[in-house]
Every structure is written in structure tokens, then in C-alpha cells.
Amino acid sequence: MKRALIFCLLPLAFSTQPLIAETHAGYPIQTTPATGGEGTVNQVDTNAYSLPQGNLSMTKRLDFSVGNSFFRNPWVEAPASTDARDGLGPLFNTNSCQGCHIKDGRGHPPGVDEPPVSLFLRLAVPADPVKDAELLRKHGFKPAPVYGSQLQTAALPAAKPEADLVIDWEPVQETLGDGTVVELRKPEYRIENPNYGPMPANLLVSPRVAPQMIGMGLLEAIPIADLEALADPEDTDNNGISGKLNQVWDVASQQTLPGRFGWKAAEPDVHQQSMGAFAGDMGLTSSIKPTTDCTPEQQCERFTHGGEPEVSDKVANFVTFYAKSLAVPARRDLGAESVQKGARLFNETGCAGCHTPKYQTGEVADRPDLSNQTIWPYTDLLLHDMGPALADGRDEFLADGNEWRTPPLWGIGLAQVVNPQSGFLHDGRARTLEEAILWHGGEARPAADRYRQMAESERSALIDFLNSL
Image (cartoon, rainbow, N blue to C red; front, side):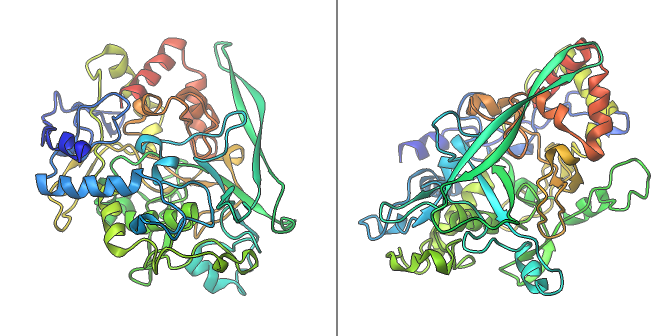
């Protein structure tokens, strides 16, 4: 309970008083450090992503601490004396949520001789839109025969992992308008040593690095009407941006709802996203995800399970509460000239066209800390065509192989403070924010091209702005 007591000593609120109200190039400019509304926390070290909402009540902070323990601590093979945390595997990617979301932050591609713990491959094969219509409606894609929806590179001692994941890096040089040369790196993924037969010849793979966890409850609290107002799938305003809401299957309500979470916005809420991670990443069942990614050919039923379900509803609710309650750190250096200049350039280049700066959350039952908050997440939560260089070629519900959800930028300047190995973009290929910008294609290509033509001082100012978030 030592960590819980530390949380209780934190300030309960953060001032949201703006310095100056301002807009520029048609988009608002943030002039308050309170990025996450009244729940914003003033933390800039390796724990910057790990604190509860600053306006969370004392009672709820205890729930947060319990959820944190199940998120942070390893799950183990069943049977075990710790029966609340057993049932791992037999096939999995990691044995704890924190193993992927390092200190509640981003994961990274594996280094030399490092297992791919916080990056994995989603798997699929091409689907028949008629024959597979019901599967696509409820699952979003067609899993690969034998190997399922996700490549699991770890296993219990008596089982074999599905295969090894190997990444080769190809250098790619970009020359900017002033002659500056930036070296990017392009990943090539190989699946080696498959243990359950050959991989299908038509296999589709999609690399995914674990995203940061902050502000998820606030994102869920954005009224859907606000996101629908931003969507423009036919680009009727002819601005080159045609974002759309994904439409995904909600297990709890047994209906199709807008997606908000995941790299392709394939999950409707934090609870389903969290239980999907338990099932896919750790081989743990829950009420809404009663099966894992094991297929009949892998004979996982021969292993002892950790209960039915293995993640009880009580534990599932604690973990979801924790995931929805991680606070957003405050902005830094708002008054710096370069940061102010960078904020204006962010709007002028069109970055704010997808990375929508500002929202007001709605009413959330029993969560006053998430309700009616002015927040600055810098995302529209919509799907956008990001061009062939970032494409995975794998559809997921309405998201095609070129489309990705706009990731929130809040807290991004602290990503490599929290995890020094943290990478950017969906597969962590970008080692710096500049590299991430230069990979933008498709609808974002015009904005990236404007960055390429900026003077060095302007590029630095834009990066300073991003680092202040």
C-alpha cells in the first residue's frame, strides 16, 4: 500500500486558468498548462504517465491503486497460490500489462537479442466480403488459420511459442528543402521458426507498438457528436482531409458502435480494449472475452486454466478504472518564444486538421473527475489515409490497409523520459518526432511537405512545441 499512500498525498486539482485566449489559422492555441483539465498533474519524470487524475477523490484513489497492482504485477501459470492472478497463457506476448505499456507509456521495437515484448504483429488473411460477412461484422477481419489474430512469441514451459519475430532495418534518407539530410529507418518483418505448421501464403501482418495510457477516460468522455462533426469521409470541404469514424462491434451491447481506441480505432471503449489485451497479449479470459487467441490446432485446452473467467469481473473493473484514470501531465514552457512560434506553425501547416487540439468532455456517470473538462488531446480519433509508406495492407472493420487513427499528442514530449527506448508511429519506427513527421503521407503529405520546406529555425520551433505537450 506504500504506493497508494503516495498517490493520496498528491494535489487533488490543477488550475485550468488560461494565460491568454488565442486562436491562429482557424484552430485554437493552448494557453493553459492544464492539458487534461482539472485532473492534470504536474509531473515530468519517469512517473509522468503513472499518476491518477489530480481531481480524483480519496476513495477512488484506493480503487486506482488496486487496479494498478493488477496492471503492474505479473500474471502466472495456473494453478498457483495467487489465484487472483493466475491463468497466464499458454501462448502470450508478455506476462503483465506493464510489460507492454512500460511505466504506462509507449512500447518500442526490440533491440538486438531483445524479445519483442512491447511490439507484436496482428495477423489476418484476405476475407470474402460475402462468405465472411458475419465474421467481419463482429471481428473486423479474418484471423489467420492456425495462428489466429496475433503472433504470440512467448509460451509456458510446456508449450511452444507460435514463432520468432525478426525485424530488419533499412536506412532511408530524406533531404529537406535546405539540404539537411535526415536518416529514417524502414522496418521489414520476418516470422521465423513457426511451431504450428507453415504460415499461410496470403498472410497479412500489422505491427503494433503499445501506446501510452494517459487520458483514456477523458477520450472516452468526448461526446460522439463532436467526433461525428469532425468526420468528412468524402472530403466535402475539399481540404484534402477525409477522416472517418470506424464502426466496430461492441460486445457488451451486442451492436455496432463508433470505435475510438487502438491504432485503427477498432475498440469502442476502454473496458473492451483492456479485456482484448488480456486475451490477446496474455492469454487470459474475461466475461466479455471468454476465449483467447489460441486455435484448436494449438491444443491450449490441455493446460490448466485459472478460473472461468480467469480475469474476474471485479479485477476487470479495477483494471479498467485504472486505465481510465491515468492523468495527463501538464504542458511545459508555454511562455517560451520558440514554443509559441511552434504552436502557430502547427496550425499553419495543417497539423491541427487531424490532431484536433481542444474538446469539452460530457457527463460521465459516477466520474466527476472526467465530466465537463476542457481538454487538449490533439486528436480527432478518426481514421485517415497515411499513405503507402505506413500502410499495413490489413483491413479492420472500416479501416483499410492505408488508414490509421490519429494518435493523441498530449504528453508526447515526455514519452522518452518515461521510456528512453520509446518509438513513435504505430510500429515505433520513428526514433524522433522529426522522423515521425517525415513518415507522414496520404492526407498528411501536404503538412509534412510544408515541414520539409521550413527553415531550420522553424522546424526547431515546431519540435519545441511538440516537446512541450
